Length: 180
Ligand SMILES: [Zn+2]
Ligand SMILES: [Zn+2]
Ligand SMILES: [Zn+2]
Image (cartoon, rainbow, N blue to C red):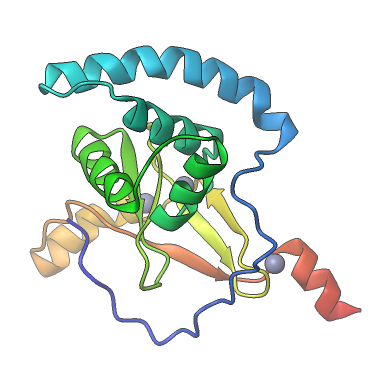
């Protein structure tokens, strides 16, 4: 559904210090509520399509949910699962993410990098700011593409069914460093 995009932008250097496992404290309460409600939902969603809730699927789901709003590479998810003591292989993580994507549990996120990123699908359409200084990724809820749909249909006779868009620049932290 997403085409591979050609983009000449220099790839941001992902800060090694960025640790996707450590969720921010202010999100903790929200996340606990989400995990409790959504894991019931996950079991039902898997079952309705003939899949079981295996410990591996539950763990990938937990890692995605704890990092809600922060797209992760399969390798990041694999590392978080390992840190939580789960027995998991990288191919299992890939297969689980593909299954979750088909079920609408996870969203693939394109950040104009070779790696495919994933995040939990909380049902809110959004895009991402990507800092080319430190690699921080932040969600943005504003979207202008839906407003373009009719214009594109009228002027180009093209029906837009999906889109991916990420915005690249500098985060407040990197911006203030540049100004100093
Ligand atoms: Zn997102
Ligand atoms: Zn930054
Ligand atoms: Zn959009």
